Image (spheres, rainbow, N blue to C red):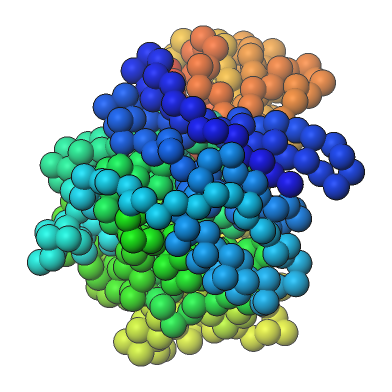
Length: 519
């Protein structure tokens, strides 16, 4: 049983918060109390709803169904919402997934409407889906559907894997850009944060619709309508079956209709009719979006390597609009490495991989336009494992570095040349970026006495301090210790690392291959 206490509102330090204690009682009798809250600036906190439990019920519903709990509320819930949740959403989910628990909601009901200011909002994350919604409704013909406010949640860092690159830092950088875009659009920006993710402890896409609705319904005195951006596969891919611990956005048509009640916020799907081709086409004609598109999963800029970057790039290519996104992506790098992206795209489609549905339309367009070119990348299933492009690419990179190490060592007087190079740049104390087992770090470490340098730290993917002669720093480090230079010893994706480090350190950055190329 989950008991939702009375909602309390507090104001402190310019922030307004509503909070309710969740008393979670397990079948074993064990009990925990989780204080669930939503927070925004004092300016917007006056629109918080505190007289009913609607938002908190929606927020915890997915958790309750996945963990076998009923919900009891110490405050009323809107009668229409209770009916729609129990008789439509919960019933349908349980009918199509036996692992869900058929949660019962115990609460008094009210038919009193929530008086709102008539605002129309949507989220802004700088991603493709949110920008498509903004482009579609920024100046649409219907005043009732025209955007009046933008909302950012968790400072925009919602769906990425930023832990290795410091979540707070990435979030702050994204938020700076979100503020800039909001000013360009001349729409007020509302920042909302909550701690629902600490209760869920799941991938955000498993409960994202519930989480967004929880935050927005909390501001029910402001919004009359709110667009939740679709995931870009179109209404035809609606799917209610087997959704236990899977992406909940595939049944937004059901959930958004359930959360929308008379006298409350009306939830609509932003861009629900469009696939990724449609969305890229739409935002390519909306310069603010094209210049600021940010969909990367791992960095606060577009890294060019993660699956979201690849999806967008091949779609832009298919539509012939690459140049319109020059300010958002390194289009020159894409063109120079187009074979790599085409190989990835073909592999996704022909082998039914994770991104197949996202890039199939792009694949078909490019193949129709350049059949002989795409034929080069079509996969023979029997050769897939040994002939996969990523393996080939990595082998090529490793072979290139191995060759550079070999040629450098064979170069006459190579150590003295390198010692002279370090001396000419007044480099004595360095930080190495890369795995402690990498060739570059091993090389520098073995030569440090002869070269007259000291390796202060190695920056690598570590969760705890490793035992070793050289101290380790985790990849999410922001405040780098004082040094004379940082040497990038990774052998792959060094341009992404350099771009990130250039914002974090003021000392010179050198790639190990620059050093190995000394003659």
